[in-house]
Length: 352
Ligand code: FES
Image 1 (cartoon, protein in one colour):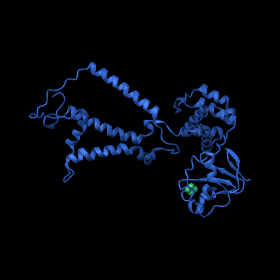
Image 2 (tube, rainbow, N blue to C red):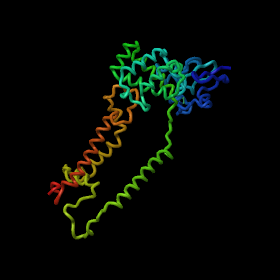
Image 3 (cartoon, rainbow, N blue to C red):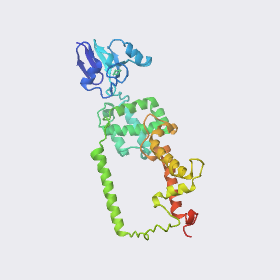
Image 4 (tube, rainbow, N blue to C red):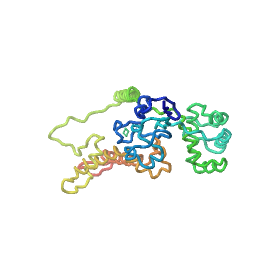
């Protein structure tokens, strides 16, 4: 009976002629293999690396996979019939990268970091303190054996990421410990492989709804309290025969009203109303919606694109700048509309 070994996972005896994709699906190893064409050999979404066994690629595989992929043992699992012992690396279930560092080397690097780097600059969700790093340095042999908690690996990731991204620290570590950047990065990958898999699904209900409902509730309470304390007198009753001059929209629409007033009439259908009331606000909304999608193409400023940008403003300067410009323009237009426009929509000063 042939065996299938999923490297880093488990080994199974299977009947000769077993279809590899069907086997992986039955065993639950297909989370990263959507197999979109249902085993027709046309889509390549069932591809995995068959490192031994598996016979030779058939015509479908030669058609769908590139030469380089075939040279690197990639196969369409839906096309592979297992007739002999087969070893396979399944996407999403690859064995973790080995931790390629000696305990005393790791200990030395951590002690160097404590003594020479500003720990406050290390971006981490945990507190990076000398004591915490000293503790890890004392347990370096457990780290190299992969026998520490996930939060220890997370801390090491933060520290090594900081080193890799800080040229001075990187050069110093390279010189002190004969550790080049490539080895540091493979160490980082090894630590990352030992973190528990991230939740792929974030439930909107109840977690997100709880936050939204809480914010809504506190806003309601705050506004109710404010409205009880502060008088908000109405203007006199409106009469159809009298149009106030200037007639101003509520403050939150005054930006648009001001935009209409200053927009040029470009002739034809591009009247000032079309330009200020439709085209410019339309572009504004379009840019807001498009920003997250466009940003990835504007990342020329990021030296390291191997990880996605972080959630803070400084991690996303293009989006942050564009958003700031749009919001600032809107606020300035509102302020002009509220304080600097008088009868006939002429310029006035607030103290006139
Ligand atoms: S499932 Fe589409 S190629 Fe295998």
